[in-house]
Image (cartoon, rainbow, N blue to C red; front, side, top):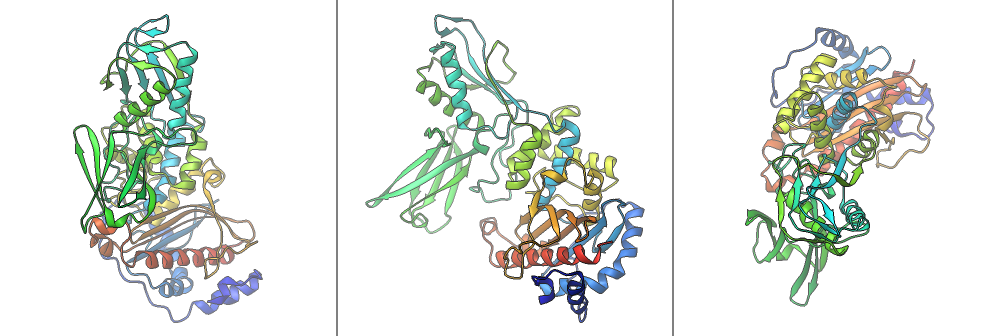
Length: 507
């Protein structure tokens, strides 16, 4: 297979290497199970049927050499005409993993527009006289997924500049712009920071920083909401170090707080990690109160969550960066909370606030069906839940419908071409903008590819071993045995397919 990774990227040399790779292949393992029945567009099936012989001749060897268990499915199309050029198992519905974020981005761009901004406000419910706010101070969340402790610090500074020194009432938090979700995917380990809570008010991606340092026979630990300027410690998220063999972490919702324990033997000398926050309203309220005190502003009452949006004059406000910027960063860093917030906000913009992630996912699936004629199923907007399912050819249709020259492609991450040792191939003529996706024994890549002569291609590559994934216990899901090597083989296959497509499908 060295023909795929030569440094002299001539069309003749690449085609010669590709031709030799096509011999002696066998089909990949058959699907272990079908995730769901879906309605199919007959035009997609007809195009894919015409493309299958080519996939059998020229791509099957690559699939066989990858040695992946489970299902390998892909589709590649001409981005200008939408014509399917190659396909394999293209109708098999599989979890898209984080590649679903590309669909969410297209959904949000259409429903909200690239210039949409989230707004967070601080209001007073009573008059301000001689530095005293006679009423409640209310923090009004607008769903901003990128708000952090520094932004709350700016609010506190703005209130000080207005001359406010004391609040007679409560610090009231309203998060009703979006539904409260305790955990994006309940099947994930409870302590992973990528599956936090979601609400209409989110701080630091709803994560708290846990840090430990050995001190003699014990440890000094902190739980804080750190950012560049501030490190306020919080009491609503508490940690206890315990002696036990398993598990590493436990979580309990008790007495209005997030109570954690950690196994002493897992800590070592020092370290840190971000843990999820399950009570985002209390978290934001506590951090804001600490920052207010730092500016000399005292609160007479307690932290309270408002059932209805409080009304009163705006004392301070923040608007987020434009949606296009937020989505660009979401696609680059694959932030699950951002995907869920923008997805549910897009759903709310079309009617009413969704009840939960599943309802919002169903609305995005209805949008995809009406807009692109696909029969997908979505249980969230981030792809973290493996109950979402669509086929490779459906993903290609959604991406192609968004336009190779539309708003989505420029904000997708550039995927460099790599050799067999995963080293970047400098100056490779095939250019790819795409979204990756990874779950345990699921690996996906979908986006756009510039062939060596500049021809635009749209593609989706899905690999999944749902049998091995289903067999994992909850505790095994962070680092399952064999998971890294399986994902590495999948990523190498993605590279080989893209490098071949960029040559053989040049006009």
